[in-house]
Length: 279
Image (tube, rainbow, N blue to C red; front, side, top):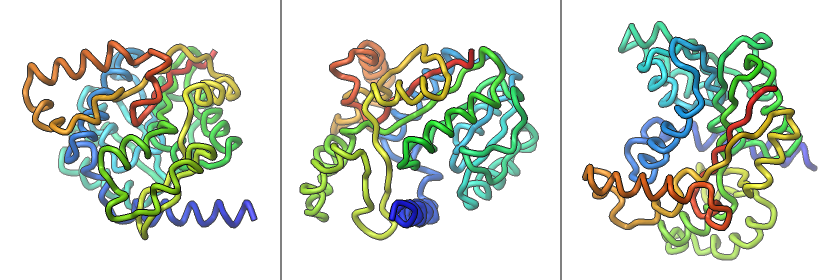
């Protein structure tokens, strides 16, 4: 039964990403913009300087890969969704200088086609969302630890266990179109599994902060930081307008930084981001 459930979950994930909407999510949506900018600054705290080699594992359509290449890094991009690889290759082809710095191919985070200690840092900004079994998540982290050089950082993003309640219910009011979401929130917060509420809807596994830390440790990585990405700022109804205003944007970013490690507030944001080092 477990295998059948996992196969169904994987099919639902591919159905969602096959729609192609992920390509613009981090720039088109106000909450996505905040997620993107905060993730960039958190990652830059521990990234080695360019032209280091960065593995962007589960990198989706390549928004982070293109950003890193633009900064002068060499990027090895792997994603399990063929459309994402096609989208990144098309985007990279339009800029030869950037495209030459990106190597993109289909790959599974649990079994990478990369040599031991062959990259300077690893981004796992998506795979932990879509592995429902703890053993698979730990294996993905272990693989990241295998391919990164000793002392190199592994960045792992996770969706907060309470993201559906705060983002889907309070902010987006999805219950107006999908009343069943109200009854599903409590079971989701017990199991961590977000089912698709309509064909092509997003599916995910959601984490508690201490759970994410424990999975890094089980994979042999030394956790050096664990933060909330958006904190509570993504709930602002006028977030887009504030992010477009330099002074207001600075206030939002400063506020997120100020509380990113407060234990009582860490689960409020939609995403968690852990940094682990290979010993």
